[in-house]
Structures are given as C-alpha cells and as structure tokens.
Image (spheres, rainbow, N blue to C red):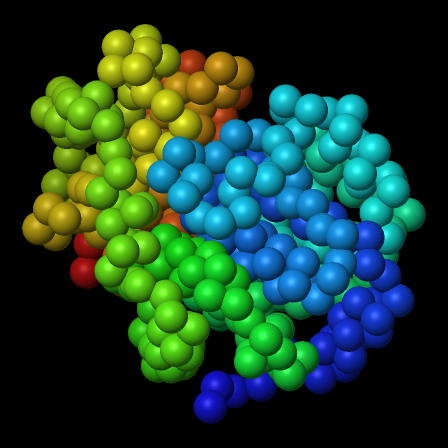
Length: 342
C-alpha cells in the first residue's frame, strides 16, 4: 500500500469534473522532458480508455528519445499548429495542467489556458504553484508528476483499469525525472509503485534502453567535445560549469534533447556537488543546474537566472550573452561557498 498523500477532497473534485466533462485537453510545459511527456501520455491513456475525447498539447517539440511511447505520435505541437491548438483549448471542457506550476512555463500557450472557459486541474510537483486552476494537486515532496498521476488514478479506484500503455508512460516519467532513480528517489513508496507498474506488464529494462540507448553518433561526439573543451572546474567551490554555443551545437547537428543529461555529468567527478550547463538557444541562454546532497540549485537559479525547480535539479533562462551568463555564475558562486565546502 502507498500513503494517501493527495487530499481526499481534491480526489472527489476531480472525479466530479470527469463525471461532467468529456472533452479534455492535457497541457504541459515548454521544452517537454520525460516527466512532462510521461505524465501527459499516462493520463491521456487513462482518460481515453474511459471514453473521453482527449488531446495532449505541448508548446514545442519534444526529444526523439521519447517518441517511442505509445500515443506520442498523437501529441499536438503548438508551435507547428497554433490555430488548431488554440481552437482545441477554447473548446475544451476540462484542462489538465501537468508538470508546471505557473502559466508562463508553457510560453505562448499560457495566456490561452488562463483565458479558457474550461475547468482546470493542476497536477504538479514544483514548489509555489500559482492559483490559476480550479483544483490544484501540488506536492513538491513527490519525485515526479508521473508518480502523482499514478497516485491520482489509484485514489480514484482505477488501478485495475490502468493499461500497459498508461503504465509505460508513467514509469518513463518517474525514471527520467529521478535520473534512473539516482536522485530524489529515496522514498520506499517509489519502489512499491514500480512493482505495481511491473504487474501491468511493462518491461522496465527495455524502457531504459528506449530512452538512454537511443542517441546519435553526433550526440556522443558533441558530448566528448563538451567535456574535453567546454568544462571548467572550480575546485575551491566543488563546482563545475559546462557551456555550448549555437555554432558548436550546429557543428554536431544537435537535435531537440541531444544535450539532455549533460548537466549531470560533472557530478561524476570526485568532490563536485554542483554543476551548471549553459546552452545558447535562439533568443536566450538555457540553464540547467544539478547538485548532490542538500545544495539548493533552485535558490541559485532563482537568484541568477529567473528560474526555479527542485533542490537538486532546476532550470533557468538568461537573456544576454554566454559570456555575461558565465560572469554572473562566477560572481555568485562565492556567496554559496559555505554550502559547497563542508
């Protein structure tokens, strides 16, 4: 058994909304990761199997290594079909907002969600959710939004009705948001849930292979170049920084998701407990921050890069040059020395 973390009143509210509405849209955050896609497709399969009309909408494209998940081909990308996506959001009776806590995390989709007449349900595990949904299921102590989707389905009494396809998507989200269960995954209930998902017939080893053994040769050559030429170690702070320009990414024909996991790699170096990856994008610098132990990447990200997230994994954005972003990182690092050197 797992604990009943989700408030019973919220369970009843969701059940009531599902009884009354069957035209449903599921939305997740910009640059969807494994948890965003896993939780969205897990909920999609569950709701679709109940006979609802369900569409998953994402703000922009998601990584190729997630396209094997059943239902991925039916995901609507707002960037490619903005008018159709807007129409579906406007006509929806119920909108599930998954894996984001504030509308701006969905970029241009955010204003559409806020303006929609549909009832809205948030299912998320990021801290400080804003009050834009009719039902807010937010528990930052939970490892992933996919885990919360599993808990929600079970609390509504529908574990037996959960399909293998639903279970595969949920497991993918749980696995990717914990680094294959290497961080933020010490809760014993996570492994009870994995056991329950295995009962649905999922092949967890194959899922791992689908996600982590599915990269291109170019991606690995870019990884080698990054670690060899673009990594700086700050031994006096037990910290590391890596960065890539747009030109460097283009040289290796980088696709969406090819830099996934880069931020974690310096943590494999002895004594490094804080790692930051700066990636030059079209209009900004995308920042990924990772740590070990109790170093607060979310605090550092909020202070420097208008970001946030979890203790050990967070993100941010910077509108300026790579050089300016590096300078901010290096200027701020000494302020955290007491937390980095123990």
